[in-house]
Length: 92
Image (cartoon, rainbow, N blue to C red; front, side, top):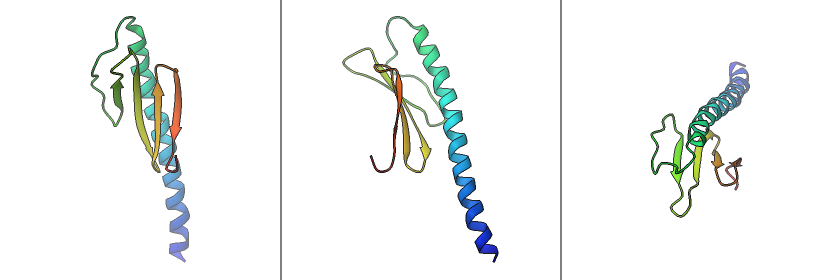
């Protein structure tokens, strides 16, 4: 009987934690994007990020990408070239 209660609680906790991590990471990325957009000329080659956020500058143009993972094999990627977020899941 106790096992029947544990499984739904576990799944609910996983969904809530994934949603929370996504929101927190997106807020952190938006702060980084705001700081980078204030730089009108060139974006840095490297950028010190933490908490699982990855910064990658394009080799051939003055564009960058920010990437983080939210769990369940889902990656969120921001492209400065398109100025939008894309989500890539486990089946992409």
